[in-house]
Amino acid sequence: MVIGGGVIGLSCALELRQRGYEVTVLERNECGGQASGAAAGMLAPYSENVESPDEFFQLCLQSLQLYPHWQEEVKRISQMSFEYTSSGSLYVVYHEADLLALEGRLHWQRQYGSTGAIIDGEELFRLEPLLSPEVRAALYTPEESHLYAPDYVRALEQACRNAGVHIYDRLGQVDLLQWDSEVKVSTENGQHFQSDQLLICSGAWAQQTTEVLGLAFPIYPIRGQICAYDRKAHPIQHMVFSSQGYLVGKENGSLVCGASEDIAGFSTEVTERGIERLKRWNKKVFPKLDDMQPFHRWAGLRPSTQDGMPLIGRLSGERSRIILAAGHYRNGILLSPATAKLAADIVEKKDIAAYNLAFSPERFVGLGL
Amino acid sequence: MDTWKIGNRTLHSRFFIGTGLFPNPYVQQEAIRASGAEVLTFAIRRINLEQTEDDSILQHIEPEQFQFLPNTSGARTAEEAVRIARLARASGLSDWIKVEISANERTLLPDALETLKATEILVKEGFTVLPYISDDPIMCKRLEEAGAAAVMPGASPIGTGLGILNPYHLGLIVEEAKVPVIVDAGLGTASDVVQAMELGVSGVLMNTPVAKARDPIKMAQAMRVAIEAGRLAYLAGRIPKKKYASASSGLEAFKLS
Figure 1 (spheres, each protein chain N blue to C red):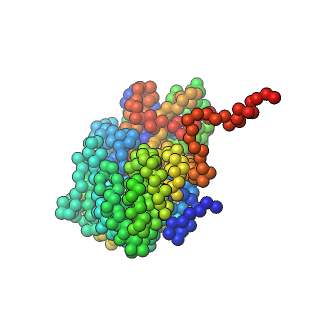
Figure 2 (figure 1 turned 45 degrees about the vertical axis):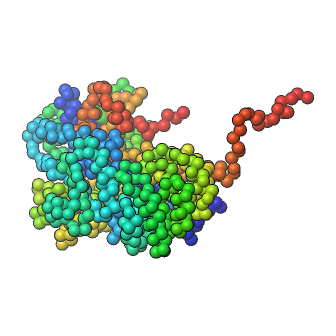
């Protein structure tokens, strides 16, 4: 039984079903209706991890490498299509002083599969002609790609249904009633479900789901506001990152630009200030965007954790029928295949690679001694 | 009240905290609050200087509550450091500047000659200059003579968490200095901070050991009390180390009369 029909819950459900399990997904609203559907869909472990090859980067990289096969499987099982593009990325910088950091980053990332290079001048503007002349240089990473998240999540949901996963949505709040000899839950709309194992994938809502367990899992929402321009009027070829935000062009003709990181509780309101900030910055990356207005704006809640790493693992003791896979913050779409494989291995009680211990959900729990 | 001064500014906290590397803005905000720091440092090159209120990091910070200490990280020459320092001042952020000039992307150790050159220029231009430098007593003296408002020797390379590699040198720097000494870079945990403060430095600057801790908010608090503990121990004066035991109650106390 899986609580949460977002990208993580659906991916885990699909993987478990493929391994022969009977799987039920419980979703309070609509599948993919929160962060999953709002995401820009960037598969960019190198641009999202600029400091060091820590455990989180390793998981991100593993997931990127799983993607070519994983997305084909999702398409095959769902009989649906979605955009999956290997566009490569440019991380743009504005000062000569940024080059040292880019060099440092490239130095370790090249040991982890990047064939990236620092480019500037003619070569840079040949790759992305509309870039601002203020851009001093960029780190080009050909390995990074992106997909269209709303379609991907729809395909995942369909793949789950086709594979025989039972999906129950619009349930309202799902409450844990029992978890010792078996797991029982009830829903706000009066339904009851039970299972021998429970996977909690409710993202920013995971803390609510787990409150009754009496353990503190520090997951909280950070709002991301995002907007889209008409890409046909302003073609770009690569994902373009900077210290202030990103831009990425989609096949459907939108140029998606994000994203704020707001402390706003569970509000998904789009604010004037949030979007204006994006617009003011965008023109410094692509000056021609100054004359254009975004045609669409929206927001989602990223499930953020105390140390930036997701919580993936089985609980201990009397709670050991419960597994968490939540708190993926900015990288839920990217991490969906790796999380699905890892969570399924945990369900199957397989040995898991040592670095995954960094994601242990009980790492924040004191021993009380 | 155990206050101290840099330039004309009186400070109550001895914690300078870096704003980078935090997992998200909420944790960053709460960790800064828990640290009690009055001085915040960040890399100028990463800041949206034209609209600082829009910046991805600064937008979450109330500017009137803090003294900003922008740094020139990434600069490889004095000329470059001076250029970005001027940009920072022109944006109205601060006229304090942490000169940070590294020549090697792997160690990020400071280039002493370029640091001295940049300090001389920026002092003449009226900046309050706090140079990041190796733990070299002579170099620290030279920077002080060039007009640095404080000197900031590294404990070990940036972000390594190796702690104080050369306490002897740090002790000498403190002994000689007529400006505040702030240990910058390389501290890993609370005991490193206590050790630095016991050596008599005026403050510590940290980012990685707080931001990358499992619980950055709790670690900020830990560092804050470590600063206080180390400072109090320094002021109180530790006992000399002795080779043999001396009973605290004295032998006489055990004699039966």
